[in-house]
Image (cartoon, rainbow, N blue to C red; front, side, top):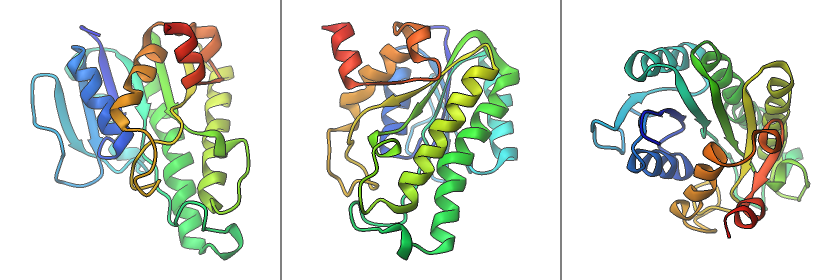
Length: 223
């Protein structure tokens, strides 16, 4: 990953942080967008932390411009910002507030649209965009409310960009990862960095573009 420029939004979350740390350890230059002023990463030659609201196109525009000025063309974008205003398995759509539903859509779906839109002018020809998602986007389960809706919308954003641009843009499904969104349940975030690394480098572009690759595909390809 040396001589590679990576941008991660939602870098303060479990998956985003693991991706930042994993790719920085591999030698990439990483721009980490975090929502709050206090970053969780030490400023190093490999990682620069910026306060970025992933829902705000002006914040994200500045992040992408900074990444391009610091490291040249962007090689990888990982829009990892996500919120869930409820408890997994307990938040029914009919009882969800309008404010919660709107924020989930704005963060989880519009945030992906913003990240890709603002990255496009700065992407290298062989750049990839990896959008984390999960089975809930396609297979409805009770109790996931607007979060499930927003993830389905995010995957639709991915598919549309994939057919309208020459860049490889796909979904990465790491399964259930321990985070605030899952109540701490699931595999450790660092355990799925290998999936992102494979999707960013060795996964066939035609299998990723507009598609979803998960743990099963990664394990089959790397065993």
